[in-house]
Length: 289
Length: 305
Image 1 (cartoon, rainbow over the protein chains, first blue to last red):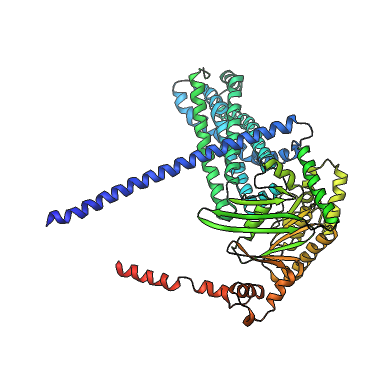
Image 2 (cartoon, each protein chain N blue to C red):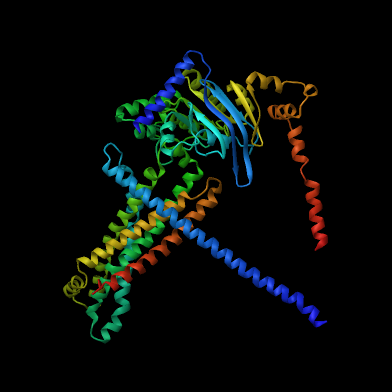
């Protein structure tokens, strides 16, 4: 009797395991397909944007869209300045306050300047600026483009023989790259200034702090930070434009909301991943020495 | 590109000459066109001719494939089979670049207006002129004011689309659609969501553009009053196929006919749609769906559980 009862139970167990494995497989396939499709779409968008930018610069008579670029730079970057300044001021104070007691134990309190400079120029300047711009620029670009899709504006552009990539994507992409780099310079300066103010309050000589800062970061250190910022800006703009334009007209506000949320999440993941890759490359080639 | 534009210019010029000589030449020709999305067939065996200078109204119930047909005519969608010709040029196999050249010769009024919200009304109308012509800014400004005057919005030149009412948005979008002096104008539900007076104004504009500017118009709508006011010919779509195509007078006769005298189911269906009656073959078709079977299946499933 027992044997008879255990057979269907075993079959049910097998079914459950099979169902779970099948579900896992389907999920992996779907996720993989989505990642491939996103990379593919972004690569095509990047290639198309590069062609359109080159055409705008080099082909005589072709409109370069300078006004649209400036408008987007103001929209994307200028409004983010107070937030970037506030965040970098806070980080410039937090880091010395956290490090001071331990460094002071070893009589190395003035090394706060070195730590602050390296962390700011190489890492926290570009990283925090890019994260702020994910919210400021990325989310607003994705929401704007997504809304344009649902309001038939993109179709109207195409019907007027106007290319949405040249008309909408290129100025937003360039604005995000340029403004991430420019804001990173501001972020670097603010962090050093704020760190110096805190260090002086902790009893470290101002001129020593300045001297150690200039020793810690050379031109290359400053430039690598800006290169990283440029790539972070490119990723933010590209992801935002791709996801915004991927909204389907029938998805309405739900589609726009999803594109906006996904933009912020994907941008942060992409920025951190790119940062890790940059750090590995710079470390492997001894560029941090 | 210049070569392609010249070629289209020649085709269009040929059409104008023939129209001037009174020869009826279809400016839009659709032959045996079919389109499916996945397993769902949305358009089937579509054959349609639209002649120079006429207003063709495409009508049908919601979801019958009107807007999909319009999107095929403007080259936004490509059919699975069949042919679509504009000015005698096959557009189903045309490259996007050549299609863009052709698009400069027709204008589209979208259902929502689709004005660019970040631009003023004037800039919306000026955009195609700035992008596709070499005109200087002063000339463009004059042209924009002329187009806006045609739709009665000249004084709203500097306003943003958000500051306009629904009817004004439609009119501004119409001004943008005619900015490049197109030969064909496509209208997707031009009167949808408008009050009767504004709707009548839009109808009058469609008639004026067609008669005064010698534009060929294709209007997709399910507003009967509007359709009978503006149409030269009407084409009725049902479940992705053309049920009937003919003159406005033919459709008016069918609308006003005695139901007892109508022989075919198709004519009775058309009459119900044209009159907007609550009862008739269309309603029966919906009511005769598998409602009882559906309920029966639910109770059977419950019993099995």
